[in-house]
Image (tube, rainbow, N blue to C red; front, side, top):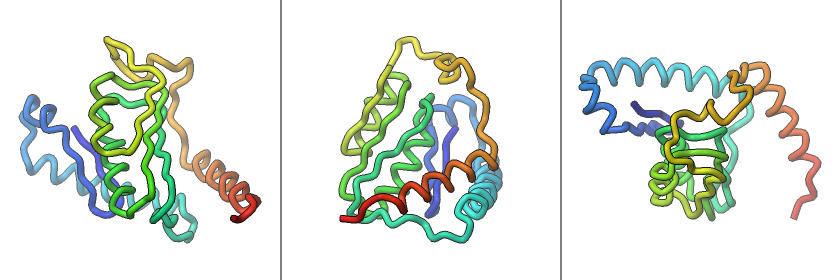
Length: 153
């Protein structure tokens, strides 16, 4: 029904909320729980590193695929609020209307596949298992190491 991101960003899928008649109090409770989980993940994944500096940089947001686009809209809003030079959204698969809708919040949107009918992101993967906190931390450590080995301009 929606998504949140750092900086108090909240994106609701109004059509889902209306269709399911989800009361505001339920949304508020779920949002509070998700904000606590977001804070936990930020602490766990950053290891006391500050958030990356985005201002004036080209930022590419990616995901394994999009169903409603709410999560990507929240991420794009969080990034856009930090004044990047350019914001690109790149995903392997998403419904055509989601790809099109994201063009309003990014400078460029790349959807490798936009099948109709869509069904679900998991249909496009042989293995769509969740990534553990340990895997995320290990991948971020590898990325940090590689970043520090890049030549500076």
